[in-house]
Length: 423
Image (cartoon, rainbow, N blue to C red):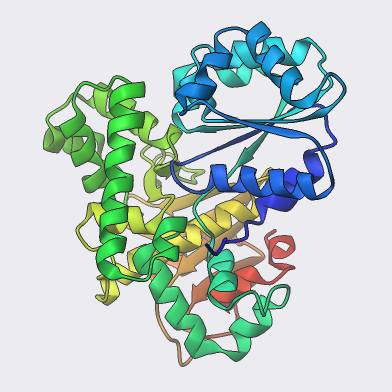
């Protein structure tokens, strides 16, 4: 079976020499187990000792009744000197944070690499338990560059940006496939449309039944499922709490609780508004985007069947938002949107202290630069050094007042230096 290479592999590999626990979290079925198994194979090629334990298996689960029992099992497999211990699905363990903390504090001669789904964060305050004892690695659905590298058999690995520039038609075909089906590995690996549909249905059902119903004890599963569908229809739009609560027939307080669940289990992400004038700009209600585009499309009944330009525009906006968040993740910068009470809006604003970068997203082919009134309003109000219009084809710069407006093809974001140019 073909394996989709993950960029996170190198980060994890480099962290193996650190004593801290390597804790991998992320949505269900994005490849955490496969990634850990790849890391295990890499270590075995170096003749390092490893043991792999999965709390989904009853045969392995029995070793987690106490720390003493687990240590005996590890010593049996690895000896008492060194080795790497892989623990999969740690969210199945009650008091997982305290259990891992106890193991770490025993100063054992082993490196621990541990995975857990999003429900791990909701079950308990695991981060507080492991403060100073772990480094968090977030594995998300397959990113677009990982997807294209896989689809092109890695022949352009390391020079993918050049491929995007030269092979524009192929790049757009890959983009539309990705916008329709998203980044779940099993979906990408499956060629038949009917099977893709079955798989995404299974992924959604597994999320609802395991993370939400079983682990989180949400009582109104029907309401939670309906909420996800409503949010999918409002990608990039401002959340109206009271309106959605009425639609789902739950209280506003319960709605906010469910939104928190959905975010902590890596299904949605919320983006807060950027503002300096609370009398004229939106200041409180966030907008919502999905971690995986395919899951979002499935919730709308449009999985693999998005052709309408308006629908593609919203999903393209979600796509770019995910990329931007990944680019600025460790930079101290924040991603926002901008709306005024008189309806002027900018899709994204990256904020770094006193500097701002407004970014408009257009699923469009441009013949010449065209700037809409809303972006001009932001430029006039905030006078940023730069503004971006991310689109399908145009690479050009113009000046509006004192601001350089860059029209950038979406694949510019995969250029090595693009993160350095964001403020």
